[in-house]
Length: 323
Image (cartoon, rainbow, N blue to C red; front, top):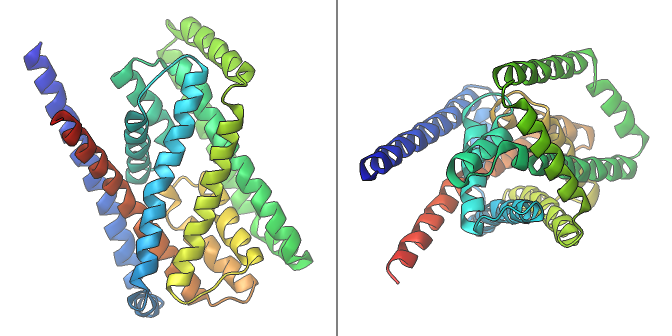
């Protein structure tokens, strides 16, 4: 048993190193691509003047975000009679985020479900409803925020949005839907023997989650807290570069790019979110270079916060072991 546990630990460590390598490799390639463009030099110049104190604030919020996310998920699991420690929920959340950055597609949430099953024995039929509700709540918050931003921006923003959602985006969304359906069909075929038990667990967990009222208010408040924290990170990143955003600009620059990132097939929505922020900056007459630099700073600090959170969890576990 001890030998098997040791082999499992070694295999887990190798997988973790592979994910981190892929993760930082993708970020490095993105940075090289940026530096080879004509805008790269101006963006680098803007970044060199960033206020370190505000970068520290940005990092602190970036560390808090996965904790808020994990606490909400922990309460959802508790609503379906599944219990895991908060540190474990944070670790699984951060690891799934690293996976989402490391590989293309939408594997972050499924990866969290698989990790929860392997590590804590929570079946996918149990965890899938909580993961789906997480995505739905985050998307709803972004839609509300984007709608308020568009209303405040006026009719000009409506025409810009109509022009942005052209045929190419419609084709991309259609392809994503086809891809998702294909994945479900293949998974259903491969797991056909267990499909009955999976569906029964899925229905039971969905009912428990829908009927639970004890944690509903806390889950909604944590969703609001996450939305506020996401908005704060954009504002602080821009302020660190001397760009001060009003309420309308902040709503548009936060919600629309993140909403587009939800349908992006690229790892972590890299490129699409930054491009959307640049387009919105041009629409509302903000400095495009400053906003793109803020987007790069925001991405870099949010990414750096993930391994920091993992490190803090390891320190906490190490200190607890010595008590």
